[in-house]
Length: 151
Image 1: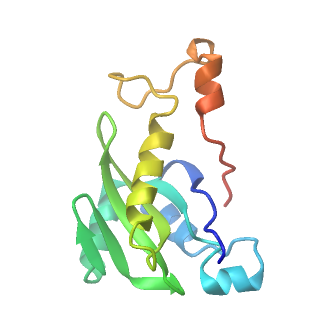
Image 2: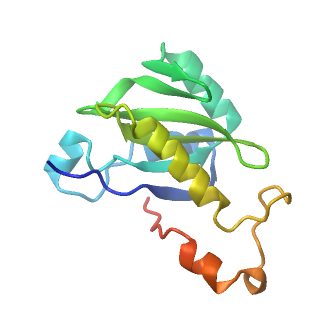
């Protein structure tokens, strides 16, 4: 049994609707078998604008809905599909990512990973303003999950 790759953010910043579509339609630099199975997409996510979240919700009936999340009804490959999230991290923000929907826990695990990553270097009570580098401790740097954005 192969293990899904770790969660990683593939775009820094908030993707406009056009950028969201571009990222959604990208072909990762990966073996053809991983692209065809969806493994190349699994556990990747990025932040989107509210209007993109709402447009995608209205486009097709969702595959499933839970509090603060829904899955797009068209799958990318295999059991891999887009899940959209509305998450409050000091303020409401919207994200989308590819989950292995064959694993019932995948959408919740991605939600937890997004929250953990987005809270990693942000000061509590200051919205989402990042800390100045001189105010980040060595422990905060060591705890920050590594990600390599790819486009």
